[in-house]
Length: 156
Image 1 (cartoon, rainbow, N blue to C red):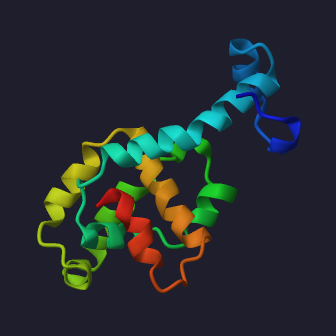
Image 2 (tube, rainbow, N blue to C red):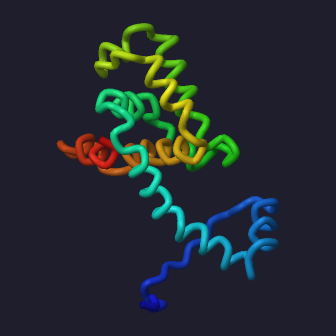
């Protein structure tokens, strides 16, 4: 079923010249390329989360949310796109090193090394999706009584 024009929203993201040229050289137009990629990302994101379902414990997911609190704004407004997918593992490792035993106790993490190893085995895309997942939590309605439960459910 073809979408009506009223179903479409005009947006105006700003991109670097290098990025614009990448789209222009691979698609019929800059607009067509950007539209295709932007429309694809939510589906690909859901697929990635589905593939990671059951990989992390509730405590590990809570720790991800905890250590990435505030990263949403960083990712959205200041972080170069080339670093997406690299924050999460470094943040988890640093948290364990800087505060030995604290996160293990706080979130009931029995095997910090296993947690870090499972993160390290994920693709950069999967890690980027986890960063987006955490950012969506903090940029959303995180004050709702069941917000953490609802947000973690797709990954448990």
